[in-house]
Image 1 (cartoon, helix red, strand yellow):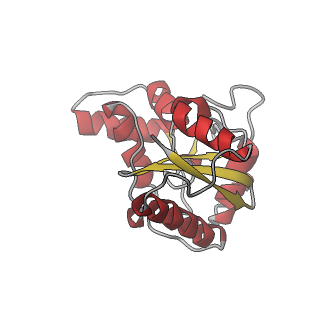
Image 2: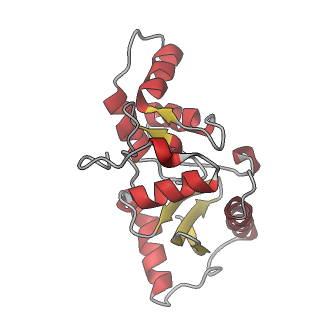
Length: 194
């Protein structure tokens, strides 16, 4: 079972989910693929409707995990660069998705990469000649721990802000917060999320 807390950010409400292993999810308000974590969504909805308090049923370990996540986000939104390794992460996903998410964690704050570059890294790590950038895009798009696992740092090879489940506007704001010059990128007319 996942326990959740809500976090008020400059980009709107965020739901953070955790279990004893660590943070399992972090979603921006209105984000696609929130349904991938049904228990967390149901718990968040029940809390929002006043049925479950933030600490009800949580052991101190889970409360500490959620508190650390909120503290991390406080520092992030204050313009600091907290390390991902400070947090215990436990996203659920296939071995392929886990590999892609690990590569996302290696993208330095204030920098971007492309789906194609991630595909090359996956191919290298798996001993394959090539890897589909589209398959990588699917894994990036289903990242359950937005912001902390920085999928917002991935852009299209053509310079487009494509593929952010939280919304292109939020992706742009996150990149600006990290000091990325976004003037050379553009918003595609269609296909803005994978």
